[in-house]
Image (cartoon, rainbow, N blue to C red):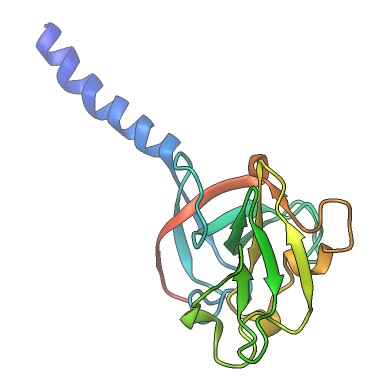
Length: 166
């Protein structure tokens, strides 16, 4: 009897753990193009700690999407304590802690974008940008606000691990 209960309970518990650890969402904008396009489906991990370079799903508290508190997808450029600067003279690349970022997904022309800034990312926050720098509303739009465009870790919903379509 106990073996039968265990045989039934194990798959149910496993399914609950997977459902708690991962989520699925649909991208609704081309701000992450060429990596992700509108209509792409993403699977995100709710448990791992976000790192620089990760693509994340976050709550849009700043209204960058035009609809505050919706979920949006962006790439982490800086984490707590990082100094993010736009842009390196000549190449237009972003600098993080005085080191230029190689971002092949951001394109050749001014991959750091056209808005100059220098921010120190507060602890417990990340600084995000879309890969489509000309078509992304992101942390750059809030550099003059008190948080300088930083997104609190509590507003992150997960790290994108897999995607298709779009």
